Amino acid sequence: MTSMKRRTFLKGSVATGAVGMAISAGPRMVLAAWPKAAFEATTVDDAVNGLFGSSGLTGSEQIKIKAPDIAENGAVVPISVTSDISGAESISVIAEKNAQPLAASFVLGAGTEGYVSTRIKMGKTASVIAVVKAGDKLYSTGKEVKVTIGGCGG
Image (cartoon, rainbow, N blue to C red; front, top):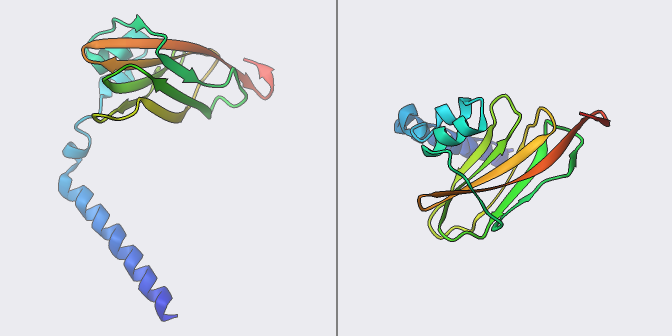
């Protein structure tokens, strides 16, 4: 009985400490890197431009997208992107026909392997585009993902 009370106390202390640190950083500090314009964009070009300041993409075979050919549930589509481009700084995932196409954007640390994995929501059948920023260039590749609704073509 005493050990359970001690565990509860320790869990509460750790949670309180984490919340205190987040509050002390301030919401402006935590959200400073949020690319609001990119995530609110309604076209692929506007999303890429909002994220990188340019929409000039160069196709690359050094980027691989792993995604299902047919996604039975558009609410949860598993996507992974691997980049063999040296000096990759970020990897972004765009679902072309979504109301807001930018689904995810990851900033990579120096020396980090060019790999991300996530789940995205897709409203309908569309191309999933991976954009990799390396240096001052933007590279991309895409894959068509068919979204079905209840087993019927969508």
